[in-house]
Structures are given as C-alpha cells and as structure tokens.
Image 1: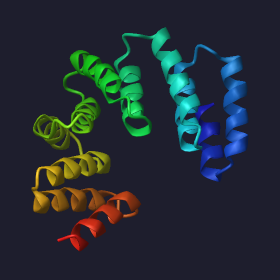
Image 2 (image 1 turned 30 degrees about the horizontal axis):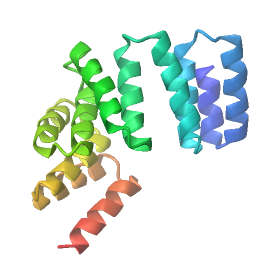
Image 3 (image 1 turned 90 degrees about the vertical axis):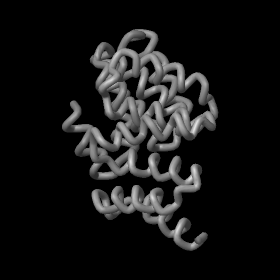
Amino acid sequence: AQARAALLSEAGDDAALTKFYDQIIRDYPEASVLQMDRAFHLLKTGKASVGIQVMRDLLRQRPEDPMMLNALGYTLLDYTEHYQEAFGHIEKAYQMTPDSAPVMDSMGWALFKLGKNDEALVYLQKASNKMRDEEVDLHLGEVLWALNRHDDAIKAWRRGLEASPENKVLQQRIKRATESR
C-alpha cells in the first residue's frame, strides 16, 4: 500500500491518492503508518485541519508513541499558532526519546516559536551534530539569525543548501539574508 501511495504521489495525482488512502484506511483501519501517511498527504494538499485531526485521533489511540507525539507537535508548530500545546507533545516525546535528533529539532523549533531562542539553540545544535538534515539547518539558521549571529545563520543555511540544492525555502532565506546586510 505504501509503495502504491508513493507511486501516486510521484505521479502528482492528488485526487487518486486521496481516494486510495480513504479506501485503504477503510480496509485496514489499524494501520497507523498508513493513517500518518494520509495525514501528511492532507497537509500537503492544503487540508491542514483534517490532517491535524487525523493525527489527534491517532495520538488518542497511541498516547505513549513518541513518533505520534513529535509528528503532531511539529505539525502544530508549522500549521497553527498552538505553540504551547505543540511544545507539550514534543516535550513528552523528548522525555521518551532524548537521543532522537528529529525530536531535538522539534524541541528547538518549539522553543524558538515560544521566543526562547537561547534554549532553542542548544537543542538545534545537538540535532545538527547528530544528523545532517536541511530542515535542521533551516531551523538552526533561523535561531542564529534571531540571536543576531547572522554569519553563522547564513553558514547553517548554506550547509543545508549543499545537502539539498533544490530547497527553495533555503534559497530564498539566503537571498533575503544576504540582501538585508
């Protein structure tokens, strides 16, 4: 099912992919991985509130799942202004999996959204040291920029762009940063 969904996604057939997810979830309602994939598809296609509701439902079924906690928390950070709720989910995931670089990234991003830049920097630097990921580099750069460490911010964004040269968000962020200097 995941392979077929990937093919439909690569083909850009959002309507067919939505129909496929709806059918496969009816057939296999206990398949939480497919439900999470469906939630991310909903987010991608502009149906954030529905995608978030799917994640909330999954978390009710699996309240101690750090992946679910982190996914919902991070999604709330990106699609809502429910930063304190997001932080609570991410903090719980971090307590369960303190060595997880994705959770460290989410903690740092949540703290940044809450205006706690110095604390955010600690988590994002840890995440950056543990894994190479352009999203971590983007977040790290944003925090460094907010702390007026502009050269370090641009370095972080360029490091992310080296790993993912097609990343439009990083391209635009570097452009804005260099133009504003």
